[in-house]
Image (cartoon, rainbow, N blue to C red; front, side, top):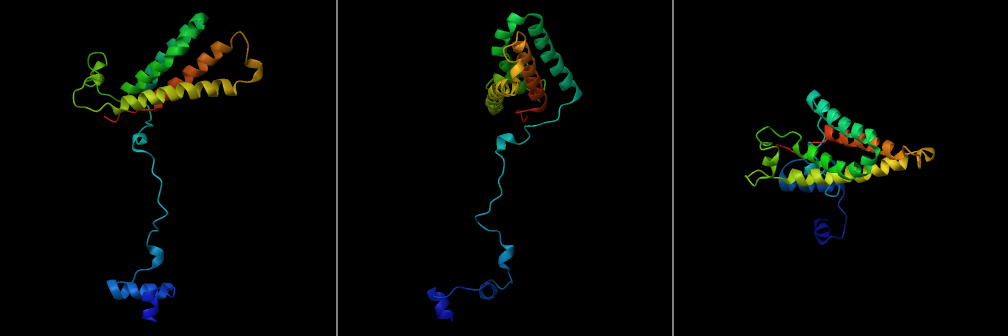
Length: 180
């Protein structure tokens, strides 16, 4: 029988495999306890680790103030919405870039983050990608979920701008690409 197993002519049963393992290694190992090589647990990419951070009161107040002023400016001066709508995503990128940084890292008006002084700046790429993606996805959500009766109205642009700023404010409150 051993010759047949060595030659590969018979299939090993669990008991025979366990006995062979016991003879070779001296311990009783069940086949069910060993992890299978094919089933591997999926892990999120490293850049997403710690990306969503609950905001503190100061963060919420500053974001409500910033996005409230921008939204108020757009509602008070409707022709400005066309121009602000093109650039508010950059403000979101800036908010994401500097969220979580210490005052030392934000020295010289925030330009310390762009110096080549030893600290990595990979979070800037993540912040840029997130800001751009939030802008495009936000536009899709705002215009995609807008009811048909609201499209084409005189105030449609103002409504879309306000909802887009709400999305930017929420993202700026909860996302933090900087790991510091």
